[in-house]
Image (cartoon, rainbow, N blue to C red; front, side, top):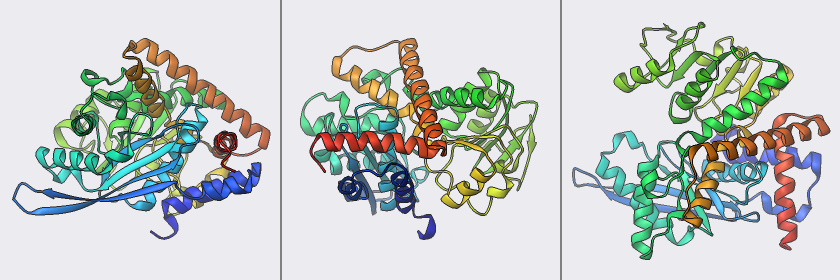
Length: 413
């Protein structure tokens, strides 16, 4: 995977944090590796009768602060390195928002768009069967991620409960409400990002009608657009894998969502300029939100970026080389391990509700989420100011110190 090897990038970020805080050398040695990586091969009988074998992984990075926690993604580019990197980022993410969980991540190398519903369900159940002995409410709790959703989580939960013969809703989060899901979970990643964006905009003195570009109009990106529009921001640029649309007076997000549902893309929406080859990242806006995949902003396109604030809704959307350029331009970056932590926070709330059998109203979930995200932003900002560094390194130093403390208190040094 060359210079953009995701796990190597994650370890470089850890090394940068270590240069600032100098953690215990024995703990640092351990943190350079996941505690366990499971690789599984999933034979699936396709609709035409032939058997196709898919490869999947589950990386369990660190459980010093609590059970492993992290999503499952179905994507053709999933790799062992990517899953390991994502499990490391989950470890820092749960620590930076200070919830009692560790970090894990799973994935299957597959294009789910090419599967029938029956094939997709069989793949989902097969993956759960393969990892079932290594997950559980007190061990490792999966959740949805790229190209997985509550329906897939429901299938996986059902398969797990069949295997163990008992209702265990807390084994997986991001479930449908009818089987133990939580209010707000569907849009929690975007909602948490909105809370930290509002905090960052306040620090920069950006007005509520500031212009926003969102790269990626999938689950998180579309909810982010809707929530920001509702908060008074002008969502000026939207893109997906097929094209980019722009209207500096503000796009009508609900209309764009309907257009995408009907056509499969934002491209061709009549209430905007269709930009053709001009990429979302090239537009001059106040706030840029990368909500697609890793390394979307890289050495090849970073010099085209003209913005004041970047909020990383995606995981690892900025390459290390690109970030150096953005830092020199004094563009404030709210890092992924803080910006998109709303999903795991509400997943944690879902676990708490599953364990108690008592479920909260939407307003209660939103209030608790805002409290946690606001506090986490303020703590990261304080860390950034104290060490005269970036918000990313502020988040990393805060998170890594918390993991180090848990490992020391367990005698793991």
